[in-house]
Image 1 (cartoon, rainbow, N blue to C red):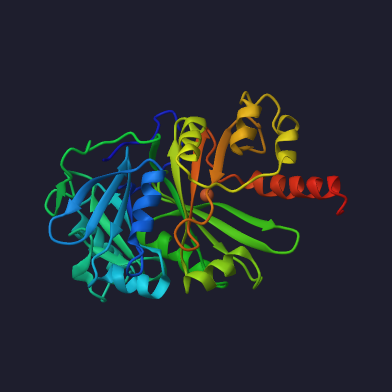
Image 2: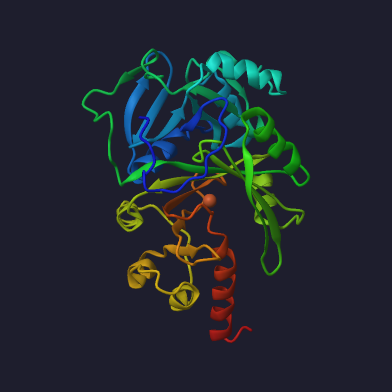
Length: 361
Ligand SMILES: [Fe+2]
């Protein structure tokens, strides 16, 4: 359950007073009658149901170190969250090596807020504080089995399924209302000692967004924050559909993105398409990358490299919107700590080349 990231992965770490140690889970909810969509989605992505709550309708899906919870409890924080937001991520959990009661006290003392709406209906009996969009942020102890008290194994289920090779949650990107960037970067900085590691200003042809990547002191818990002042931007489209701020995408790490994506495609997971023109110039953009370009192109897997050396690689692909406006990213890092910034420009240019080929431009 506490599977650690690929030891070869380079991460930047710094002072970690609370002992942050990775993401534990993301919790999902859906309006009445729509939970089967979540169960079907997670199965298509290679997850297996491994635990059931002993008294409430909550299922834990697992694939190595990635845990996704489906909360169907009709009288709960989750149900009320889904009534407001539709299919949504009503909570997420971070692991701590410090006692979580101490972490909770420190968070509240530093300006964090307690959850006041049905806090007793939380999926796990650990401290919770208010997270993005008023979702529950669970503070889970690293030591021991946090699920043992309230969950029972599903008979016959492998407790640690390998699935399609997802290994841990790499990052959870948030979409914010324009003007709230400072408030949320302060939240992660003051409450959990996160640092800003990257800032980018991404300009498409017609719309743009700014993104600030916050990273926790363990170098593993990464939370990029997005906002846009353009009402037609993809960020604002999300905010309208979701009725507020929240998790935009959940990126899961794999040690073999080709095998993972091929297995998911075979199971019916739908990914974003990428024009062939993107793959025609991969060798020019990133010389000597050593990847199998026809296999990248077949699977529509994107590749990026750091600006300086062009040697630290990142492979990534995004699913179609999967849970309301929330989507997943599959990511494999090969020494690259970024988020695929180079792909925004490359995708933009590839679409233009396609337009030129079609005689539109
Ligand atoms: Fe991402």
